[in-house]
Length: 423
Image 1 (cartoon, helix red, strand yellow):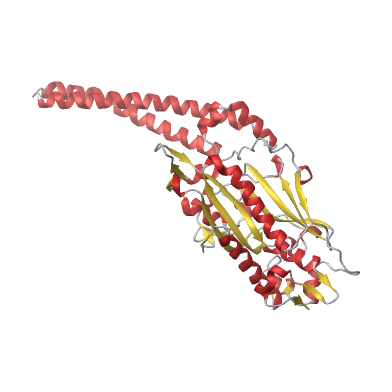
Image 2 (tube, rainbow, N blue to C red; image 1 turned 90 degrees about the horizontal axis):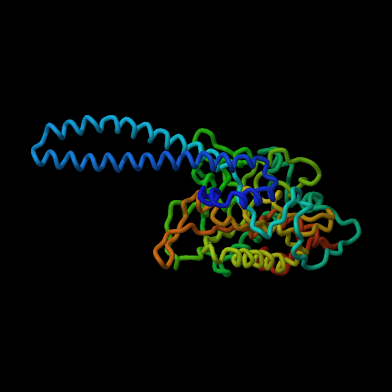
């Protein structure tokens, strides 16, 4: 959530950066400034009235101690009108604060200056590309045919049990899933991340804290009776570990990792591009989350991007890194790098990770602060990244490593799978 003081003091900058996102309601900025001015005027009047009431109370006390009860009672009567005005102003202040809150939560984060304007994925900036496309044998198959051929993932059985987008992993397919989860967690802990095991359902406060609510409630599964949401990513519960917390500066950076299943309704997703593992309602992911000093967050963003790339290199995957344009970024992000792997069988890029810096947008919602060396309290910066999401990684591994003898497991995974081939 943006800070009102920043909006008020940097109106032109806010409007310019929102335009990079193709934000369709710039008039909200002026409405926020207008209501904030009303709020500040009411607050000033209320503070003045409170000062007068405090002075009157002190004077009444002095008159009572001096035995001048008649004068004290007269002054009490005079201040009764002030109490009514105080209540009226308090109600006006509460109303203004609510209006301000309802408006400001509609504003997305401001893109970093390096983020370019754009509205479609085609306008994202290619930062780098690593490796070469896999050379596949004649008659190479897409992963949804490979999974049927080797009986390792059953999409129809998942549809029978739950519905489309909930596959069943079988035999070596299930073991490959487990191998990847352990591979990603081991590398994260080796990189200094502390492993956490967190709930898979969160309350509204948690969803609001990381920005899923009120922006993405339609994309989340909701358990209505208990008013809980199935998590779309481990980012939500892991980052909320620090909601309403004041840290010490020396505690930064905080680095956590967690494996969780993720649940996304993906409403409106259909077509060939979402076939098989390309788009699921339930999938596994290992997440990395950092809480850092504001001065270091963009250095950390680059480090997290390099870390995710190191995983892709170990798996032998041809990948590229994109810096997302303003119109393709998430609501809460100030800058996002997407990592995409090349699917040689599908002849297309598959997104497997997003690494984002949210600056103070989440920490303002979370009230996540730290005390600096001078004792001043300020908001921390939060970052997170997929390290990694499994479905499209599995799709790429299956498709890019198919041979006449079966699917060759990447060397880095063999000690986790216990086998070299799916055959």
